[in-house]
Image (cartoon, rainbow, N blue to C red; front, top):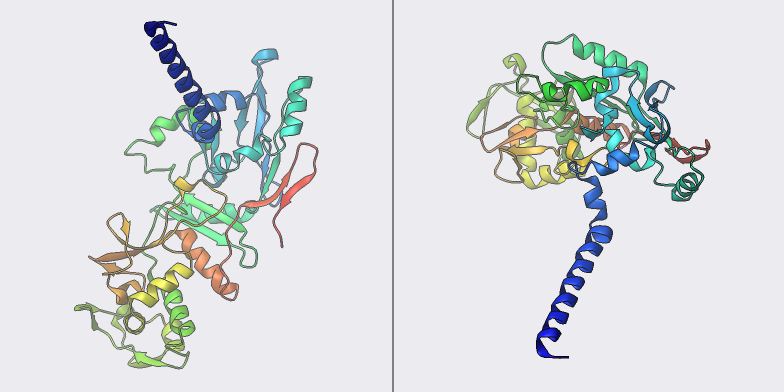
Length: 381
C-alpha cells in the first residue's frame, strides 16, 4: 500500500471512529438529557401514541385523562383536565407544542408506563394500545376548592399549602392567579406575557415571600433545642428598640417589658425574638434554618426548576453571613439580606413542629397502579 492511500485509509478510519464515538454518546450517555430537553419534541410526539395514566385526587376526583383523537396509524391521545383551573399548578399539563409542567412532567415515566418496559414491548409487538400507570395524588379536592375560593377573595396573588404532619402528604397546594391547563395550547403566549400576572408561576413553590412572624417558630426551636434558652427564660420585649442600629417596634408599638419566651411567642413580640436571634447568633440561626430544610430546594415529586430554595437572600443569592440576624429571626431582614421563604417551605416548618421535630419529605403521590390495576407504589402511613 503506497503512502497516499495509507493516509487516506487512516483518515477514513479516524472519521469512522469519531462517528461511532459521537453516536454512542448521543444514544447512550446523553440519551436521558436529550430526551428531557424542552426543545426536543420527538419524545412528546412518540408518547402521544401512548394512553397516559389517569390522575386522581385522594378522594377520587378525576384530574387528568387521555382522550383518543384520530384512527388507525393517525390515532393519538390528547390530555384533558376535568377540574380545569382548580389543579392547574400541582398537576400541570402535557401538550406537544408547549411541553410539560407540574406532576405531568415529574411523573412522566410512570404516566407513560416506562417503569414496566416488558409490558410495553408486548404491547408494541401485538399492536395493542400502549398504556401508562394511573396516579392517585394526596391532594384533597374539597380542601383545594376551599383554599382556592378563599385566595380568590383577596386582590393580591397568593398561595396555600397544607401538609399532613405524620406522612408529608400534600393535601392542598393552591396558587392564584391560576390557569386552566385545557387552554394551554391556545393561550400559552398570552399567559406568558408581561401583563398577564404570571399565572403559570406556582407561587406555592416558586415565589418566596417574607415569612414574617411564622419565622419565630424556627427561632424558638433554635433557642430551645440549642440549650441557650428555656420556655421560662426572660428577654426584653419593650418597644421600640434599636436592632442593628435601626429602630424595631412591636405590633402597634406595644411594649411588654421583661417577658418569658412562652409569652413572647404567644404574643408574637418582635423585639423579644429579635433579641433571641441576636443572642443565638448567625451560625446557630443558619444551622437551624438548614435543619428545617432551608438553603436547598425541597426534594419531592415535582419538577426541580419549579421549586425555589428559601433563606436570607441578597439579590438572587442566598447568604449565610452578613445579614441582620435579629430581623431575620422574625422573618424580616435588611439591605444585607432579606428573609424570604416559599409557602411550601413554611408549611414544612409547621409540619416539622407538628411531627415532634422530624422533617419529612413532602409528597404528592398516594398510590400508583399499573395498567392491570396492581398497586406498584404507595405512600406509607
